[in-house]
Length: 154
Image (cartoon, rainbow, N blue to C red):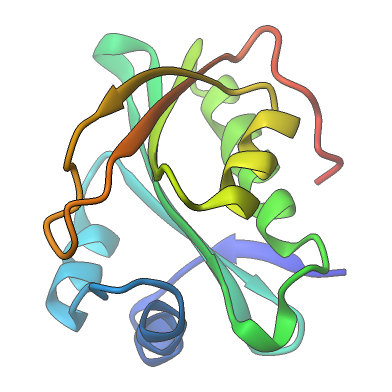
């Protein structure tokens, strides 16, 4: 499988490559570097060998919440459980830091991601109309109670 470890500045090129393959509007090197430095942000990479995926999430202690910003897997390594392992790792880390709620937004048309989140115990609670600026697609807001979230086997 993969090892999941905190990302470092030396991983930026790999993160940018995965971004370009995964998102219509990829984050810049500056944005990713800022996430690496942000106090409440966590960026984990899946290595197996090399960076095959990553997860960026915020653990916000004052609200006991983890917010999943992005999970992405390099196209050459998709459908092998990398995203599920990254998500499980983030939820476990969040629980260990006192989070009781997990939140995220996902494109309404991103069926594989929605299925992953639903397997982990997330449920859609709201639609943000025209949320994505690049094409106006709606986003589903999904929540999970971390006391009841399924263990994805990370």
